[in-house]
Image 1 (cartoon, rainbow, N blue to C red):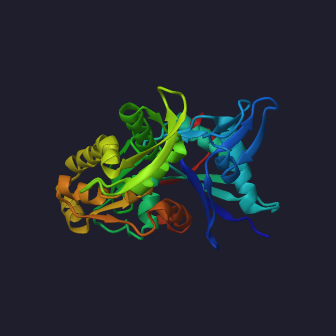
Image 2 (tube, rainbow, N blue to C red):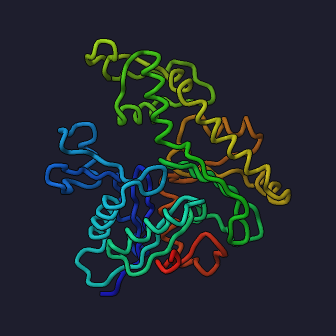
Length: 339
């Protein structure tokens, strides 16, 4: 049995693994449940996610990736190893692995990612930048002399890039994304209603109630949390107006980052982007009214990719086939590079 090529979208919120033959073979939360008493891993992925906010003191549910990069090297290594084992099974052959990373990742962060993959059983490691993977996964031919802009709004970072002729012309990466939006909702509800929400509740509020363009207040949801004044559980009803008020500044922060990239993009490519539109990918692309808000603020057509959550993962799958056509944003990494 020959080794397989594995593509890993190493997301802050979820890890998605693809193979060339089967497509997406794994999609699980990037969470590890760790027992501090025994210093051992209790669960990884979906099983660990079920424990989030529900564990005793000696078991902690850890998100080892923060803002798109590794914050806990050992736990990340365990998580990647477990997921690769799930995909590669009992094969004796080590796989080639392509890892998707945010733009502007530092050498230290690159080394941590590469070491984690090699120690988890990879034979060779390749890195691909998220905007390149997102464009490939969305079906855009970036090898042509035509400007395309992608805004990939993930869990930890929002990556913005303009690509042409197989490479990135201008790009930016900001740490305003899904997790920060969740925290903005928690902070707003805490301040306005004196109710503390959990992360999972805040995420469900974001998914169900966000309307950034034209909210009427008619869409409402009952949520449960802890009353900060009484220290007791309580249920309240909030509307889409509350959510817009909570996350509007985050949305404007992303839009201003897009504007900054457009301002330094060559005029010919800006003309192409005006014709083709801005492509939105990642979970943030599904925020209600965000596309319309971008169009209103920037006066540029905006499109949401098909299956935006899976674009980056699909791009990692295609990257091995298209590697020779990519002038930058995809490369084989060896540890000697950092020495």
